[in-house]
Amino acid sequence: NAGVMQNPRHLVRRRGQEARLRCSPVKGHSHVYWYRQLPEEGLKFMVYLQKENIIDESGMPKERFSAEFPKEGPSILRIQQVVRGDSAAYFCASSLFSGRLYNEQFFGPGTRLTVL
Amino acid sequence: KQEVTQIPAALSVPEGENLVLNCSFTDSAIYNLQWFRQDPGKGLTSLLLIQSSQREQTSGRLNASLDKSSGRSTLYIAASQPGDSATYLCAVPSNNAGNMLTFGGGTRLMVKP
Image (cartoon, rainbow over all chains, first blue to last red):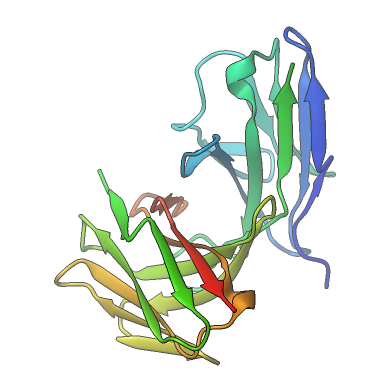
């Protein structure tokens, strides 16, 4: 079984460009989470999605960031008009359930975004 | 708001030592706690998930304990090896729908041969 897949693994963008990060969850998992790890900082929750729905985006910056998890295909985290402060590692995780049991989250290898 | 703290932030030990990593959390109303390992420039590998009804969980040379009432968890690594060198993270899920994880800052472990 393939684990959580993320691509690209490394992404370089110039200020003002758009970044699109993709995440394919573990097969059969319908709960996807995005986390961000800024340099020398801990991992912080950004957004939680189920198929076709954003459930909780309380950790997302209010502007320029958006996320989707369509019925078919991977989850996408989009960052418009990137700035240097967006440089970070972005991790995706998936889980089978979101209840109290069987909610263990499995993480992908991350996408490392560098903004020049 | 849940806060997770890990002490020490960094630890360097000679090979073969037994060691303990500490994790504390402010809201004891959790129903599980996960320990992860992160190698430099890599993703997170889940090491142990301990349910609130459990006091301990073991996997090989790793043993995690959980004391909800005091808001603490420890990760015990027996007979450490250079390959154990990594950053160790603990995380607890929120009580909101979705169980997003709150992470500690991590303990950066170096095991010297």
